[in-house]
Length: 176
Image (cartoon, rainbow, N blue to C red; front, side, top):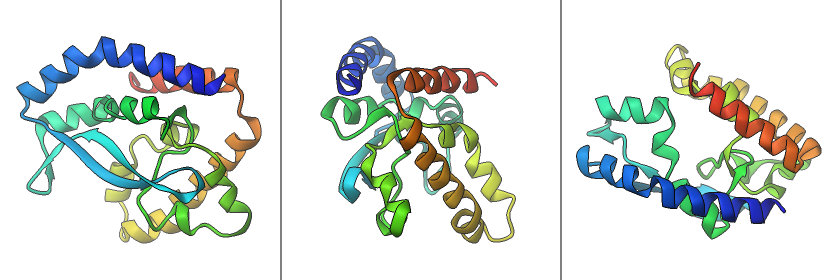
């Protein structure tokens, strides 16, 4: 049921959002940004996002795209292809999820998602990290372990209705 939901909703959203996405790409000279991320079973896949940076800095329009998560919408294609789901752990760069040990590796049983409770909680992760003396250490010792814990909780609780609840909470968080 989850896969059917993902396919139908991602297809409909892509049809609906394609014109405005093309407008954003053309208007802002944004291109699609691709990067390898770690997916289900630790397999790498190419994720799609709208490019929000230029010369190593987030652009003005990029800030807006990031704030409302518009830059993530090309991942509807990842969902349609079956590499991602609407709800699941946010895919991370190589070196994090693929290096989990023991029970924590159960996170890799999940297909990565466009949203999760951890993504909602750490919606402003970039700002949080910028306020730390050692952002990498803070990410590695505080944020990432908390995300893993939350994603393991999701693994135990997941259901169609739980996913719907997370999607609704995500939409609400965009306007807070």
